[in-house]
Amino acid sequence: MGRIVPIYEAIGAISSRMIRRMIHASLENLASPPLDPLPADLLARHGFPSRSDALRFVHFSASRSVPRYPQPVPLSPAHRRLIFSGFLLLPVEPCLATPAGGPPRRQSLSRVRDPQIREAVKRILPFKPTAAQKRVLAEIAADLERPVPMHRLLEGDVGSGKTIVAFEAAAIVMKTAGRSR
Image 1 (cartoon, one colour):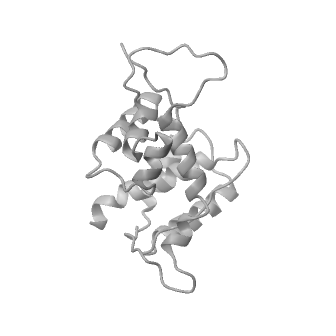
Image 2 (cartoon, one colour):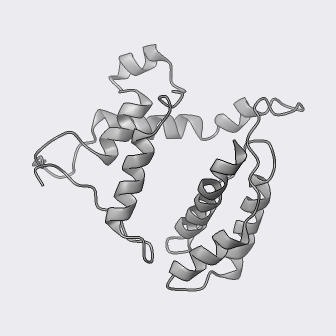
């Protein structure tokens, strides 16, 4: 192919290639670069790229060859930037969105539950979701119906089904995105 091609683990009938195309389309169709929560002087001081450049690099490196690194593989500035902002903002971001004792500062589009989404996801899954997965997804779907941003940390052991819960939540948002505008 003449370039580095990302490989994603298939999810049921959704192949690595389909996931790669969805991520590429998402990054290319951004109306404007995503808001960068890190100030420009911090980015410059640490040699970090912008948020949108970092996201594009980690999914679709512009490099045309596979670099040969000694073990362990050093992280690129794009990887370091995303890790840094993730650790910095994980505990801070919910506080920025909701002042103590006050109403949320931002509004969000509410999403209406659509049973067709759940049925479509069930058809492509090679297994049945557990009771815990169903409960958490119901909580997330209820949060998505509210007109305020959801702040939720989905945690669980390796193999407990976090990805499928997140995938189904993303499907709810994608399916209802056109209707909410």
